[in-house]
Image 1 (cartoon, helix red, strand yellow):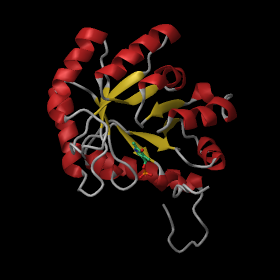
Image 2 (image 1 turned 90 degrees about the horizontal axis):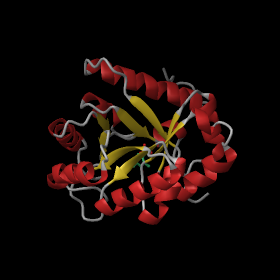
Image 3 (image 1 turned 90 degrees about the vertical axis):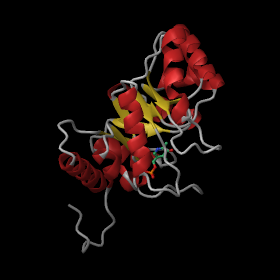
Length: 232
Ligand SMILES: *Cc1c(COP(=O)(O)O)cnc(C)c1O
């Protein structure tokens, strides 16, 4: 797909086509009949690149901060908003629950009871509840969000019993310094044990591996948009 002899910088359209090809190829290798979804992680990216991504036909986007997402999608892209799906993939504070419910179609980072409670309250007020994923801290890193693997079953039971919340998926972010595959296998196993169907795992470096291990959606940022410029 990509011609390495061509010196021109890759366009967003080419990058997206390449990632989609790799997704399809990985799914085929794993003999999967479904096609995993591509979540384009637009955090920190300039609006021009996001505009190009929209023009390329991309419909699902991920953001990791509520406020940044509100600024981008609340104003600039208001007219196209109904046609796309927005996912929150970063930590959510309880005091932002209402804002998050208003903006996002999917929240992938439910990881504690206090947040479940805040979401239910906000959902009643606003009249809609996004689809939910539970974030699992597969590496049990102290600084990282997510429920510990051994606490997942009890957490899911509590979500169901007390809040009538039935998450459709699990999400993980493996430790940066470790091979990702064992974490993907763990998430896959936890989903099977708890009868959960969706798995959000895999980023630019490892989304093909994640797909071979059962990811139903991958969250890809820099491989699609180019590097994030945090100084801009
Ligand atoms: C930033 C981010 C991504 C995308 O990372 P890339 O390496 O640029 O693909 C995926 N998931 C989460 C939770 C992120 O914060």
